[in-house]
Amino acid sequence: MRLFSPFNWLRPRQAQARCRTALSSQTSLDAAVKEVSTALGPAKADLALVFVSSDFASDLPRLQPLLQERLQSEHWLGCIGGGVVGTNNKGKACELEQTPALSVTLLNLPGAVLQPFAVTTDTLPDLDGSNQQWQQWLGLDPSALRSLIILIDPSSSSINDMMSGLDYAFPSAPCLGGIAAPHAAPHGSLLQGQAVRSGAVGIAIGGDWTLEPAVAQGCKPIGPVFSIEQAERNVLLELSHNQKRDTPVACLQRVLAELNDEERELVKDSLFLGIERGALLMGASTSPEPRSAFLVRNLIGVDPRNGAVAVAERIRVGQNVQFQLREAEASRREARQLLCEARERCEQQPLFGLLFACLGRGEGLFGSKDGDVGIARSVIADLPIAGAFCNGEVGPLAGSTHLHGYTACWGLLRHAPLATSEADPPPSA
Image (tube, rainbow, N blue to C red; front, side):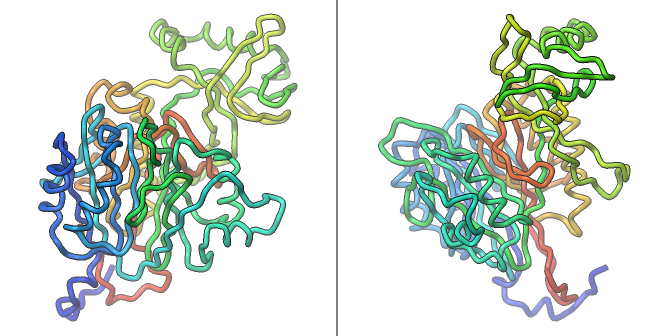
C-alpha cells in the first residue's frame, strides 16, 4: 500500500502525472483542431500523441502548426491512420472508421525520460555488426530506455529487418507501433515535432515510465499442432503429427473435416497458419504452465501437384505449426485474456492505453462499433485510449518484435519507478 503524504498537496500541478484526451469528427481540419484544443486546455505536456484520419492527408502539413498555436508539449508524435481511436472530453472511448477524425492526447509524465528519433529506412545498420551501431543510428541511449513507440511510413522498406535491429539494440524493451495509412498527397504520413516525415519516427520511454504490451492476433487454433518435416524458405512441403507424415494439404483436409458448417464457411476468407515462437508471458492469476505463442501469418498459395502450402513467413524444419481461424468471438476472448494479464502485471491503474489495430478489425470483424476499445474498457474501466487503424501493427510476441496483420497491439502506459519513493504521487487521468 502506498503511504499517504500530506506534502503531495503542496506539489506543483506539473509534477502530477496526467492524461488529457480529446477527439473530434469535424469535417474541417480547422474546426477539428479548435474542438480538440478547447477540450484539452493550454497546460503544457511532456508528450503529445496525434492521430488523424486519411481524410485530412492533403492538409497534414498544416496540422502541427495549427495544433502548436493552441497547445504546448515538449514532444510531438503522430501519424495518419486508416481510422482513428480516441477518447472524447466526456471520457467516451471511440473507434472512428471511414470518417474524418482527429485524436490528440497530452501526457504529463513526471520522472520520465523521453528520447525522440527519426530515421530513413533506405539503408540500415548491419545485423552482423555491433548493436551499438543500431543504437547510434537511432540516436538513443539504451541505459535510459525501457520501451519504444515506433510509427512507420507505408513507403518504407526493410521493415522486418528494422524490427530485428530494434530487438538487437534494445533486447529488453517492448516495441509497439504500426504502419501509417497510405495516401496520394506528395508527403509522408508521419508527424514528429513540427515536421511531416517519411521513414520511421518514434519515441523511447524510460525513467519511471514504461509500456506494458498486449498483442491480440484474433485467431483460434483448429486441429492439432504439426511439426515441419520438410520446407523450403516459406513453403511447407511435409508435416507430421503422432509420427504420421503427410502433405500440408492432406493435413489441412483432415482438420477441415472436423469443423462445423459455420467454421467451414469462415475458412474461405479467414484461414491462417500459426508458427510457434516460444512461450507467452503469463499473468499472475493464470496457470504456471507456459502457453505456446504462435505467430499468425497468411497462407498465400497451394501447389496441387505436391500438396505444398506457401505461407507469408520464412519457416524451417523442426518448427511447430497450427492452422488458425479468425473470427469475432475468439478475437474477443483472446484480447480480453491478454489485457487482463497485462493489467495484472501493472502495480497500479495504467495512466493510458495506446492501441494500434489492423484495418481488418473494427466493425468489419466484430459486427459493431468500438470492438477493441470496448473490450479494454471492460477490463480497465475509464481507461483513456488513443491510437490508429494501421496497415500493419508492430508488437512483441514471445520476446521478439514482429510486424503483424489483423492484430490489436496494445501498450498500457504505467508508472513503474526504478526506485520507488513512497512520497511519489500516483498517476491520475
